[in-house]
View 1 (cartoon, rainbow, N blue to C red):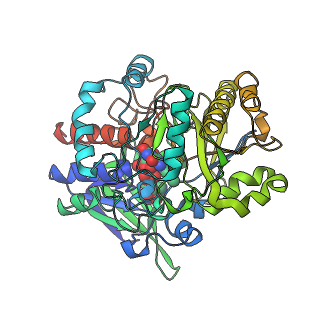
View 2 (cartoon, rainbow, N blue to C red; view 1 turned 90 degrees about the horizontal axis):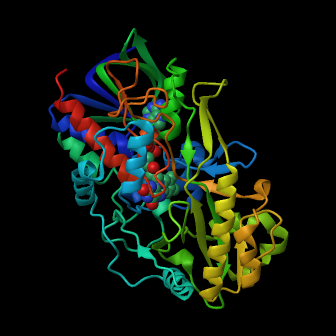
Length: 487
Ligand SMILES: Cc1cc2nc3c(=O)[nH]c(=O)nc-3n(C[C@H](O)[C@H](O)[C@H](O)COP(=O)(O)OP(=O)(O)OC[C@H]3O[C@@H](n4cnc5c(N)ncnc54)[C@H](O)[C@@H]3O)c2cc1C
């Protein structure tokens, strides 16, 4: 088996891995990034959804989260990871969340003030800001509904300077306006000397006592052939994302507090029909969020294509299928909750490539989703929607305020909920409380001297806001702390 060496191996090139590679390479370390997915040219981005999903998504976009209420989940599998297919919405970790992490998990040195320089840096590097174009109609209608409800909204900054509103975020931004890692941080990491090797899946970490000595990986060639490779390194950072990081650790025999505490933000989508052509599918997704009811729940706009609308309507397809004739009048919105349930991640018994994920939706999650649906439907009716179709099996369309208000006090049927998520984290929480955490406050796994995590898996629990900013800020803090410490 061929063998390669580096001072530091970084596994995964998403939000966490790219930042790690950049900071360590800038500090003069010899860094190799191993990325399972392939690297794509800008001209490959924005392809029709089935092709884009095969190229950029893990398992072509088919990753169920198992449970009594299953949740549809997707994540990226390409150079740049999920940042290549995300919407680029940007939040800083709220002060309240950081205080909770400090109190409940003993997370040290991660106050709002301590993280501020890392957020400043990331926002500059990614060109985070609000849009300078007129809002699309789906955004305007949402704003009108919020105002009529007497609530407030905020346009959420995005990591997409110069967004051309092509509505192709989820297929890889074809104009290059979105600052996915492949277009922003990774080129800087490469310029600083990091080597990125794509198409290489790490199958196992090699450990001896308290040290990780390297990895066994499989390179798959474009013609389908594959070969096993062995890489040795002095330090290893696992940044394979919220599901694959715990899966790889457990497959390698590292199980302490690993993969038992997955958190997600569960989302319930609705399709709203207006009596005008909104053409939501032809523009960037609605840019506003309502944080009036945070931290329990948030309301906002969802990615909208005819295919996405059909998936939402599919929960009650017989009743709703004719709505697809009016798809130009439909727009897509969501209620998202912080997620107080817990999940688990395990490598599947069958083969080294599969990971099983489960999540138990809490009763609290159901109550918040129900109240959120009531508020979202009321908002959309106030905005002028004629019908609101929730992704809940057996639930009739909501056409009146009283039909909406019902769900303020009554829980939705748990097993009928058609939930989705793109935000997963906390499967290996970090902090000084060893009874709760897999890693210390800077991502070093307990029990190991040179093995670290530095991605979404390290968040203590749900941030309740879009997570990429928090992941990047913490990853940079951790990498800088590592690089400046004596080794
Ligand atoms: C469709 C979508 C929309 C989203 N929208 C937003 C948004 O608007 N705002 C926001 O803040 N967040 C958003 N997110 C979430 C955000 O993108 C993620 O939270 C973030 O990218 C996670 O960073 P990460 O480094 O943990 O994992 P990722 O960015 O997913 O990177 C992990 C990388 O590791 C690689 N990998 C996995 N296993 C292995 C292995 N064994 N060997 C080698 N490589 C491996 C993967 O292929 C992947 O490239 C969205 C996500 C998706 C999928």
